[in-house]
Image (cartoon, rainbow, N blue to C red):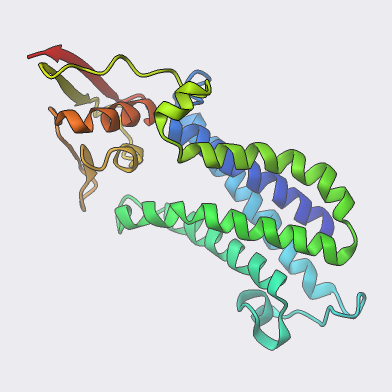
Length: 256
């Protein structure tokens, strides 16, 4: 049970991160720009956390085989490095707890500290990295590294590629074919008009993450934005429009 749940959690965790990147960047917009895209990310995340929790619970059933496994109790499953806990176990505990915290606070992100929750959500990259290292160290300790090399790398390589691409400059992505090239840069006499369809906008905050100088979610969950941003913010505004999962942002470029 521990091994099966761990492998399912590993695959689902990688799928969750990949799906989230596809949504945040707008790379999946040709499939759908609807709510189902976001819901798919949430379902994958929920399943990954569920199987991760099942994997952790399975350790309470282990006794002394192999000999370095002393009985686990609730405290040892929650607090890293306590009572002789191993570093590899602690990495998995921290990673799972971070992902659980992100999932739990997601339900109140619109009403409480929404902008801070966006920063917390970005910690998911570190949480995934911790659990991946936990999985590999566990495979080495259990003698299953060859199996993980075959299956684990197959899942990890595209996940890592997408995660790295998420933070690459748009011009680099355009050169390697992962992103459509932006329209030719506007001239000094050009201007940009930005508008948001409030009926489509669900206040996910993706626009703020992509263009903080143009879009901002304020404390009462209202979206404010600069309708005519400065030229240095044009690239940010285009990135936000491309990343919006609900396609609620419209950009018009005009001559002054």
